[in-house]
Amino acid sequence: MDVLLLAAGGLAREVLAADLPGIEIVGLLDDDPARAGTEIGGRPVLGRIDLARDRPERLLVCAGRGAARRGIVERIGAHDDRFVTAVDPSVRIPAGCTVGAGSILLAGTVLTADVSIGRHVVAMPGVVLTHDDVIADYATLAAGVRLGGGVQVGESAYLGMSVAVRQNLRIGSDALIGMGAVVLGDVPPGETWVGVPAGKMGDRS
Image 1 (spheres, helix red, strand yellow):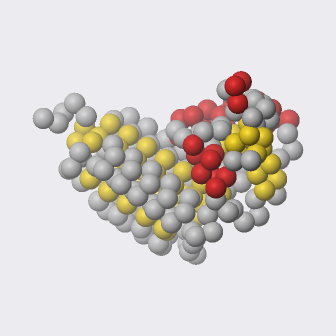
Image 2: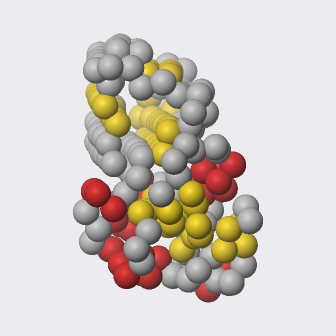
């Protein structure tokens, strides 16, 4: 199927570099006027994101931040059936696991048993999701994130590279977990946690 990528940054380039079965990326849309008429990964930048409303292709939102992905989806007013789900061929989706519309699972992502991934989630290379993890819409899991079983990640939360989360914890919506953090307790919505063990930024000595 023909697909347009919305937002022409680093995530779009990673998607272009993947060999996604059944997906033919025909171009990109981006709001930066300097990108119009250029090429990224051999595909043309065709104009602003608002053009997606009137184009016939299926869509994939490639903004790096979850809040930005949510803003694009709301702005163009497209229903879930307009969006493709991009899963690298190296990724296996076992029976009992679900992946929502518009999500992107890059190379080496692992799902074990009964993992639930929402809409427009991004899992960068090497993410490991174990039994009963629940990832809400627009969450971003950077490269090498590891979640124990039964972890719940809230909407638009961002987990930085190589974050590890103990089993049965909750990461609140819009929370940010810094690179390399080891999370041993629930993280409230909107907070930034860093360190080993992780704690709220500003509270650590």
